[in-house]
Image (cartoon, rainbow, N blue to C red; front, side, top):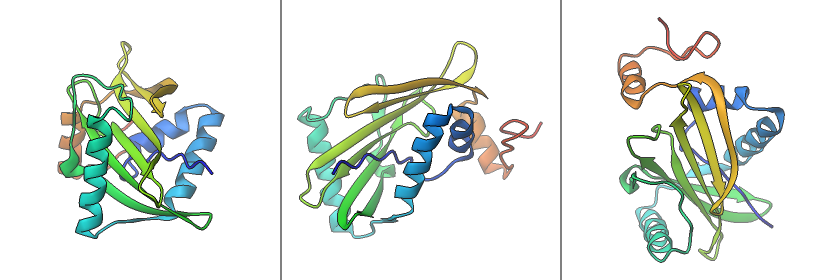
Length: 180
């Protein structure tokens, strides 16, 4: 069985809005991911977290996985670790933020491990700015381009997003991301 999972660590209004603005087939994929996410829980055991971190770093350094981002860093200190139960199987995922000037803060790399600690799938989601000042979502599965879509949502810089989050302003999906 192949389990493919795209996890951003937590649901965000930008991602939710993008899910609505991309075509029907992608909407179905997001629904499947949400279904899988509902079968997951945070890993809190420090030993498991360290083991998953070490395995992830080893897979990256040994080039066991192909990465497509450039001029950015993986921020393991902000990684999210999940336990997933699907079809009587246990999996673990590690979602690591990709941080760089050209990437939105929800860009990430997710690795999925089986119960034998083998990587069964990985995804890379890169959120960038288009020439039209819209969000572009580029997704790679197992190192290969899966999909690239320019949304109809105006691009918002990481600093603007953080400013609005810190100030407590709510995202407004239907009339734009932020109130005027």
